[in-house]
Amino acid sequence: MFVASQAFGGRLDQQMANLNMLFRSEYTCFERFVLLSDDSLALLLLPGAHTIEPNLEVEDGTCGLVPLGGRCDNVVTTGLKWNLDGTMPLEFGALVSSSNQIVAPTVTVQTESPLLWTTSLRKVRRQAEGSS
Image 1 (tube, rainbow, N blue to C red):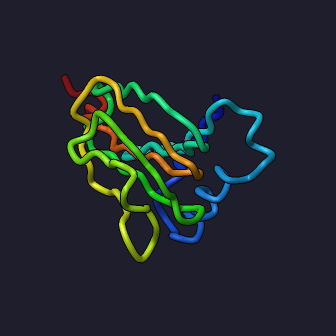
Image 2 (cartoon, helix red, strand yellow):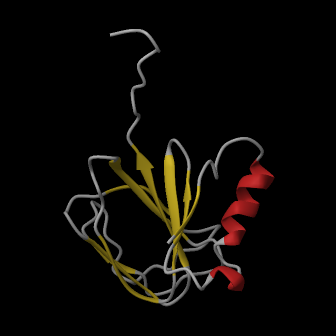
């Protein structure tokens, strides 16, 4: 697994360049290429069946499936509040599955095209130095 931390925040064009890295062939040698920030985690789901086991101690349960590389047909999910049944394609200008909720210990995603999985991370309270 390869993790790029602080991948989000700042200029939008830089965030898009980081997302573009997920699609680049030179990174396919990694089983997972994860983009990470203080607030979010994102990874690319390649065509096929995927099982995701969220860690709800660090993830807050909010997730999304974003069709970044183009239209995604026949996307089927389980374990989400609003599951997809493959009848509506995901694409910009139409349906994008944002702000969904994880409702089961395991999420499954079946996709015919590359699809971005995103999840929100819980806020970590940091104590100021010297305080108790």
